[in-house]
Structure formats: C-alpha cells, structure tokens
Length: 166
Image 1: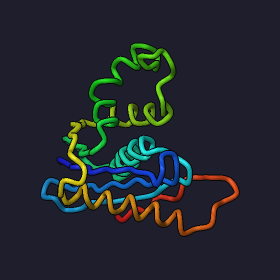
Image 2: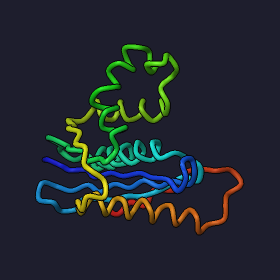
Image 3: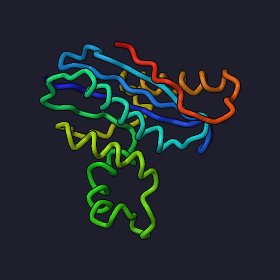
C-alpha cells in the first residue's frame, strides 16, 4: 500500500519551545493517523526531524503492508539531509564538511535507521503555499507549542507525550 506523510516542525524562538506534527494518509487521501508533540527547549531543525521520526515510528507500529511512502516536508534541512548530505556524513564518520560532528546526530541516526527499513521518497514542498495538509501540520505544530506555553515549566525539561489519533 502507498502512504503519504506530511510533516512539520517549528519553534517559538530558535532555540525555544518547539512543536512537531505529522499526518499519514492512504492512497485515497484518507487520514490514517496524525500526531503532534513538543519540547520546551529545542530548535526548529530538531522539531522537523522529530516529526518525520514520529511518523515513521507510527507506520512501523501499525505493521502495515507498505509498498511506498512519500514524505512531504517543507524542511530543506530534512529533505537534503536524507537525499544528499547523509551519504557524505556516513562516509566521513558522521562529520560535517567542517570536520565537526553532524548537528542533531542523535536524531539523524534514528531517522537513518527507520528510513533504511522502508521504501521512502522524499518530496520538498514550499511552506505557507496553501497546500492543505502542509498547512494543517503547521497549525498542529503551533497547537503543540501553545500547549507547552500554557503549562507551567517542569523541573527538568522533557518531551511531551505524543498525541496520536488512531
């Protein structure tokens, strides 16, 4: 079966409180699952990566017969990271072109593992261009951030639980 995954991540300040969101649809555009969450102190790039990781974990947990997944992201960091940069990073021992460790390596390693197990096509989409599911993910990301901001800070910053609709 073919699935489309729409993802987004963002922050209120960078770094600052951040949110991520995903929507998974089937071949006919029916929403199979969606999720959102956030962290109190993070970066935009980390939230963009986490949105994709959470969506792929959701697909894996459902044990669906997957023929193809297209991931639609408005993050060139994620799209270029997975289609261009990761090959060099791995060849260079997870070092960037400046010979320093790749930023957000913990998340890139998780995403690389998940992506290696699934037939994925990466599709960059322009943000705020009126694409309905991309706009919905953006709204969900902001909802996750607002939820964080409306709660008093925890003693130790930890990720929020995932809100997943099944």
